[in-house]
Picture: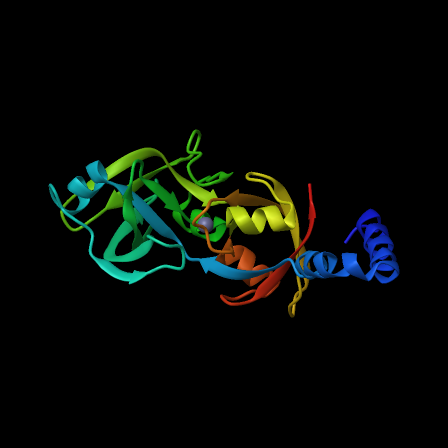
Length: 226
Ligand SMILES: [Zn+2]
C-alpha cells in the first residue's frame, strides 16, 4: 500500500469511529482493499490451435478430445499433443493442445524453452502475434511451418468485471504483485485482463514460477498499479 492510500485508510478509520453509521460500508471496502490476494496458476508450454492447423496436423475435419476442464469456464486440456521443432531441428515433444479451437494458432513457451529450440521469442500478451516467432508444428498426420505463432506469454491476472470494480482495476492495466515465498520478489508489468466470466487467477510461466518459488495454488498480492 502506498502512503496516500494509507493516509486515506487512517482518515476513514477515524471517521468510521466518529460516525458508527459509516462503519459498515467502510468495513466491507477495507476488507477488499486489504486483501488483494490472487491465486497463482503456472502455465506449462502449450498450444492453442485453429481449425486449418488441426486439419493439417491431425487430419481434415478432426475434432479435439477433452481430457480435463481447466479453471477458466469453457477452457480445457485436450488429449492431443504436438511436437515443436525449431530452426536448428531441436524439438520439444508432448506439447499439450488447449481447447476450445481458436481463430488463430498460438504457441506459448517459456524463455528456457525458446533457448532449447534455438529461437528468439518475444514476450507478448495472448493474441498479439505480430512479430511472434516462426515455428514448425508436427502432429500425427502432418506438419506445418507457421510464421508469427510463438510467444512467451506475459504475466497476467484474470479477474471478473465485478471483482475488478471492487479493487479499482481496469482491463489492460499493468500492476505489480508481491511474492512471499522462499525467494520473495516483486513482479512488475502484470497485465490485468477483465471479463464477466473470468475467475480470479494469475498466470505465469514456468520460468517465472521457478525463479521466485511459486507453485500452483500459491497466492500473491497486488501491491500497486502502474
Ligand atoms: Zn491466462
